[in-house]
Image 1 (cartoon, rainbow, N blue to C red):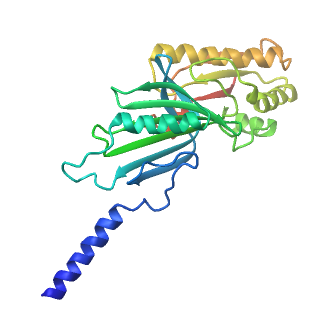
Image 2 (image 1 turned 90 degrees about the vertical axis):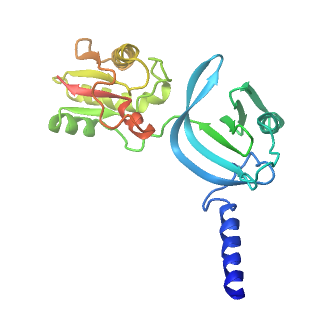
Image 3 (image 1 turned 90 degrees about the horizontal axis):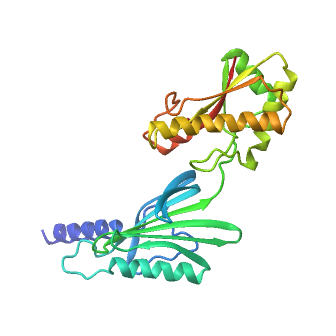
Length: 278
């Protein structure tokens, strides 16, 4: 009986210790140490995603490599234990970020958030610190700002084959800032291949169709998708000398998704420009 009791206590000790160990495969972000007595209970790092930050009185999405790290205090379930306050947690991280050369963009104590940004080794970082009400846990959301890498290279031959077979092709190498319709310079590679296709196939005319995800109002998305299509058309005509009258701009907002809008990955696929054979 005594041996069984000892065995049970050992099992319980292992379970408790295991519950307080860092999640397997997790790690601290290399520039930011955790507070003492906290362990990692949830962790993810995604090659490309977005996160919402509160900047200059409005919500702004930043894109890039995203880390989500949730810390829990080892005595989170201990009644009466005095955890660090929200303000203590925020001040610890704001001090660490400032010491690393960061800039405090905004700090909102009453609503449990701290927002920060800083640059290190040429990399722009955006950080949200979200403590729980009593300080028993907190979450770090970190974005290493970058543009999405074009994993599938778009070339003139692929455009031609897709239009002949399917009548359309989604171009994911054309980039815009969130909520804007100015074509970014990193779009040049894709635009060059579109222009090459059009010049090699002078009898083919195309619709340039803008698409968005479902975030925001329908009217805003409809206008934004049309403005982006017009911007692509204008760049192709003015910069790449595509004859006016061969391209026709249209925007359909969120009306033609190719993936679910309930996940960030699906929304990323839905935000696109398509060429449609006319």
